[in-house]
Image (cartoon, rainbow, N blue to C red):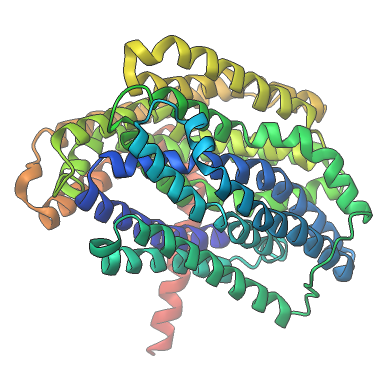
Length: 519
C-alpha cells in the first residue's frame, strides 16, 4: 500500500502542480474579476450534475469489479462497465443540447446576483463545459478497472496529461481567446484521456461497446442503491451550488475569490487525500468480500488516523503561509492586493475542509463497502445540506464570503463524528480506544509547527521575486514539516513512526541496491 500510495502522490503532485500553474496564469491575466466570476458561476450546474450522475456510481462500481475479477468473471465486469458508460456518458452527451438551449435560464436560477452581462458570459461558457461532463464521467468509470486490479500507474500518468493539455492551451491561446482557451483545452484533455484509458483496457481484453444491459443483477443492485447514495456523495457539490447562490449577491470578485480558494483546496486534497483513499478502498472492499467486518473497521480506523495526522500539517501550512504564497505567485498582472486578501481569508476559513475531507470520504466509503446507503444519505447528505442552507442564509450578509467558507468547515466538524459512531455500530465493531489521546498529540504537533511557520513567515520578504519567494516558502514549509514530524515521533503519533520506519527501510534497500550495482 505504501508503494502504491507513493506512486499516486508523485503523479498527483505533478498533475496538480500543472493545475496550479494554470490558475497562476489565469490570475495574472484575469485577476479575480467578472470573467472569472462568470467561469465559476458556469461550473455550478456541471459540478452538481457530475456529482449526482457519477459520485455514487463510481463508488459502487469498484467493489463490484473487485469481486468479479477475484472470481474470474471478467466478462461480467465488462458488461457492467459498458452499460454504465452508455447510460451515463451517452445520456449526458444527449442532455447537452437542451442544456445549451436553456443555458441563460439555468445560470440566472443558480447565480441570480450576477449582473446581466456576467450571466450571459457564464451561459456561453456553460454550453461548452456541459458536454465535457460525458467524457469526464467516462474517464472516472474507465479508471475503476485499473484500480480494481491495483494498477495505479497508467491512470496516474494520464492524470498528469489531463492537466498538461489545458496548461499548453492557456499559455499559448489565452491572449487571443481569454478563458475559452482553458475551457476548450480542458475538453480536449478529457477526450484524449478517455480514449487512452479505453485503448489500454481493450488491449487487456475488455469488451467495451455500447450496451444497455440494465437487467444485469449488478446494474440493478447499483441502481437500487444509488439514489440515497447520491445525496451523501453529492452533498458537497449541492452545498457548493448553495454557496455560489448566496455569494452571487455579494458583488463582483467574490465568486472569483471563492473559485481560486476552491482550486487551491482541490490541489491539496488531490495530492494528499485522493491517493490514500484510492489505494485503501480496494482493501476495504476485500475485507467486506471476506465478511471480515472487525478487520474492516480497524482498517478504516487506521486510515482515519493516517488522514488526520497527514492533513493537519497541510492545513496549518495553508493557513499560515497562504497570504505570502498568494503574493509571491498570484499577485501580478490583474490580481490585486485586495484579491490576495480575499482568497487568503477564504483559505483560512477552509482549514476544516482541508483537515476533514479525507475523513468524510473514508467514512462514507466504509458504509458503501458494506452496502449501507441510508446512514450516509441522512447524515452525510440531507443533514449537511439543510445545515448549510440555514447557516449560509444567516451569515452571508454579515460575514461575506468568509462566513460561507467557515460554514463549510463547521458543517463537517458537526457531522463526521456522528458518521463515525454510526459506522462502528453498523459493523458491530469493538470500540477502539485512544482517540482523545491521539487528537491531543496531533493538536500539540500542529501547534508547535504553526508557531515555527508563523515566526518564519514574519521574517520573509514576499516582494523579493517569484523564484526567491517560492524557494523561501518551500524551505520554510519543509522546516515546519520537519518540526511536526519530530514532535510526532517524540509523541509517538500514529502512524508517523510506522511510516517513517518503513520509508527509511525502503530508502536503505534502494541505497544497497544502487551500491551493489556499482561494485
